[in-house]
Amino acid sequence: MVKSLKDCAKEWLDTLVVAISVAMAFRAYFYEPFNIPTGSMQPTLYGNHYQPCEEKGAMQTSPLKWINWLATGRDYKEFLAPFAGSVWLAERIDGRYSLFMVSGKRRSDEISIPTDALPYLNLGPESRGRTVVPVPRAGGFRVLHYFNADGTLGPEVHVLKNTLLFSGYDTTGDFIFVNRWKWNFRLPARSDVMVFSTTGIKGLMQGTHYIKRVVGLPGEKVEIKPGKVFINDVEMGPLKPMMGKRGERTPEPNPGANGHGGYAMNAPVEIGELEYFTCGDNSDNSLDSRYWGAVPEAKVTGNAACVFWPIVNPRWGMIK
Image (tube, rainbow, N blue to C red):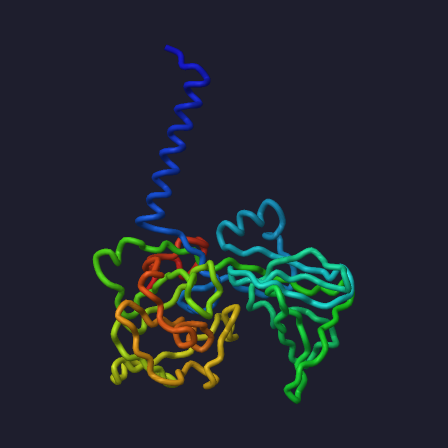
């Protein structure tokens, strides 16, 4: 018996619905993909980050660029200032800024850049030897300003037309699988890598997820001094400030300040019965529980299990 086109289409649709349902159930109850947004877990895990590149290579021309991106997660980008003006940034939740130019009522097209690319922007000869800072504005925008030697805020950075403002690789952060079922059988343990929702946690960018390592468990007292961690007044070992691949600091989009100029805490913290104290492995440059408190158990998504992409990646495999 020959099936009609309508019957074949219905069978394919039924199969597709079942496949999508199975995939959604698998994601909801077993393993969920997650992209590392920032450098707070370096060198264990890398977020979206910048890699310098002086010129566009052969691997960044079509179709080779897509093969290169699939293997390495690297995408070469350039931004040439279309007109003279100020440099503006728009904050994102994925460890990147949207970069664009503004002059009066004119606004250029945007390009996304990793947050750690800011020190590498080419702002022209006027900026050489001068400190530049992104100053917050309303609406989540930031504008680059010079910072004077006497500690006062200087004028906006002005860039000339046709300045090659940005060039280099925008490299995607590690993609991992989050194990959603493991902690149904045992509680999170110290040193586990935890993914959790920021929604409802005061002081964090809402509507996204963070990834940190568990340092303190429910009911414990945690104190962090320079280079040391104390649990219930017992020294547990060092908390070293791990740095990025090239040695630069890699702060998250909204780094806090604890008054110590490092990774110490102002005072010991008592953790609630249903809370976890978490820190980033890049501990001198991580916005974590030292600034906004413990993670409520209800916000926990799961345990970071393994890195599965990019394929060409020294961190590929199980997360330790």
